[in-house]
Amino acid sequence: MPPLLIASPLSLSGKTAVAVALGRRFQDAGRSVALSRLAGDDHAAEDARLFSGLAFNVGRQAEPVEPAAAAADADVTLIEAPAGDPRGPSGSLSAKALVVVAYSDPLPADIPSYCRALGDACSGVIITRVPSRRLEATRAAAEAAGVRLVALVPEDRLLAAPSLAAIAEALEVDSSFLNSARDNVIDRPIISSISADPSQGYFAHYNPNAVIVRADKPDQQLAALNAGSPCLIITGGLPMLSYVEDRAQEEQIPLLRTHFDTGATVERLEALYGATPFSGQAKVDRVADLLGEVDVSSLV
Image 1 (cartoon, helix red, strand yellow):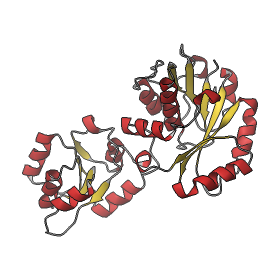
Image 2 (tube, one colour; image 1 turned 180 degrees about the vertical axis):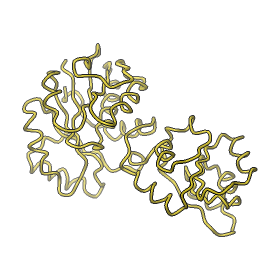
Image 3 (tube, one colour; image 1 turned 90 degrees about the horizontal axis):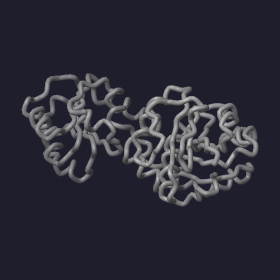
Image 4 (tube, helix red, strand yellow; image 1 turned 30 degrees about the vertical axis):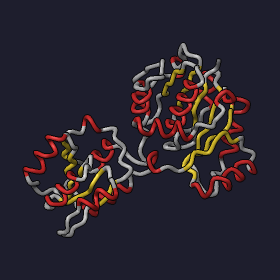
């Protein structure tokens, strides 16, 4: 069976998420799956490591591969290509190709020409990050443009959220206990109150998976810990109360200590959402559910 190439005109369109989801779907259909990532862009190494860690991937390459080495001894081989022109890789692999594009309004005008360049090798298009209110309009627009639509992936907060490791890098943090939680997805951060009122009820009500709190607010920090917050992002660069640090160490709760103030911290976090590479088991499970209705047999 020829490989299926996952291609896209632009980076960060959702190729990795789609490749992982389809791999899970093929596995659920009783087929062995090999996932590979071709070299050629800044995200290749990270994607290859993600693929190698997936339980269903019989390929297990932890580094990007060249087209000639991408095929594996599996029922289905899925190969993610770098963004851009896929005709070279698809031709050298005798592969079918699935095109992934991110939603925009109107749809990118070059989708039909991109698909035509693939000729008969094109299996169709998956459009990602589609707002729920625009699903039917997007479907109609794709059909009007002559695009063979395979699936629409709705916009999803979890899929758009960055990992704790990406947040740590963006905030230039002095982090504690990050290794065990670096792939945790932070989709529910909240900013702590600056008032002196007790905040434990506030944190418990919103159930955040990260609390952004100033370094000089130990009462707020302890309230977040008491409410079960799994991560604290400490802003301002000032010394912290040693009791809070000891408590976090005892409970193995990551403390991300940044020199940025709260306003700058939030601005840096905001820029990460929808703009970081796909990673983490939570995202693997979510995107597989979102593509649960795709007829994968029709793609190969």
